[in-house]
Image 1 (cartoon, rainbow, N blue to C red):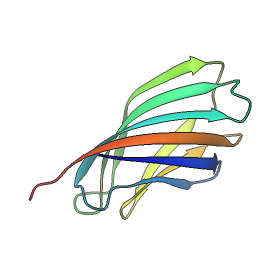
Image 2: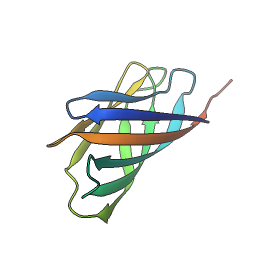
Image 3: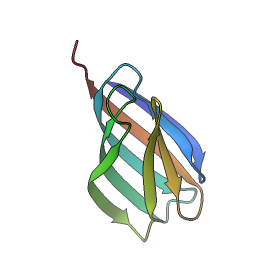
Image 4: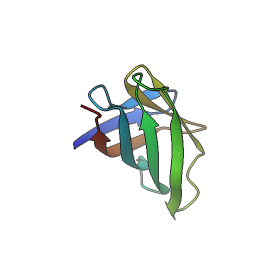
Amino acid sequence: VQSWRVHGVSGATTIATIWDHRASVVQVIGTPSGGAHYFQDIVHCNGDYISSSTSTVHSLTMKGSPASRTYTVSGVDLNLEMSSGTYNVLTYAVGLSYY
């Protein structure tokens, strides 16, 4: 179990590192400065041991109209790119290994 707080997410930004897990489920909560919009996503991702892929399992608008989001994995990093604006993001990850 790991958590991260990342400020200033706009372009593709690393929001979690999944290096020691082959599969992770990540809860992502984000809001821009001022708190007019909130989102919460549940993302399943595989690190570079498998296929470096992501899938948004559930996406929830908690307040307002948050920007659309794109998740990618690069090596062992889970990246988030916002379609517009700059967001502060909190992540909470649970990982599974095959050891």
